[in-house]
Length: 346
Image (cartoon, rainbow, N blue to C red; front, side, top):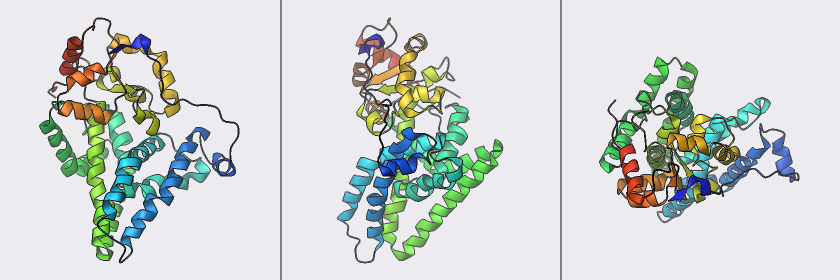
């Protein structure tokens, strides 16, 4: 436990750069924001690592079972987090300028399928529904009605999403008359599964391991992440972003996943550049204190989810940033956390 007044931010912030190599100069003129060169670098790495590896698995005679753990270790263990957050941020802030707009399809349509991200599904769910509803009951990924320290409740949450998620999102978008988003979402979903099934006739094992299984793994990870992001809700004010989401600061996760830990800030200002989030947080610490927000240091959303599943409130409390001066003991912090994870009838 550490008071918010004693926090020093170690997460990434923008450092002005004046010299660029020829590749950077080539892309800067195409980008909406030169600070997003990190996404060009990451995309380039994926084009020479994950995608060629996946292609090799499809070549007749080159698929071997021992390659799958290596492929998954690289994919899920190293690149999935940064990729999904790149997809997230470029959904909010298009990477390329309008005249190069076709290149904005590369991340969701070309790279995304190798990470279990069906084209357009992330955008449709996250911007078309989640941010519009802010975890309220009309958000089909809302955590409100669940007991948020229960693994059984989480499994219900996950399998409901897996079984009904596509249908629920399509119905929601139709009801909200977001027809363009809905059409692109259904086209992306249909195209992905047609491709995966067609490739099964060429190499069934490669298609299953490269495209099918990652969908279920990544959707599990995203639901666990969303659960952690919206696990501690003030039942008296569930629409308040300061108390329906959390911030995770000063974590390794923020360094590798583009400051994703600042989830309260992100819901308040969805279009803000990820390098500005730490500064925006520091400017408003008094507001976080007044609202009694939940903030953790050194943890990420997945560790928050993990500790909740095992009811390790002691570890969560130990890593809390104390914004309420009335909380002076670990027992008081645990009591607050337990209160915020209670199921909210909707």
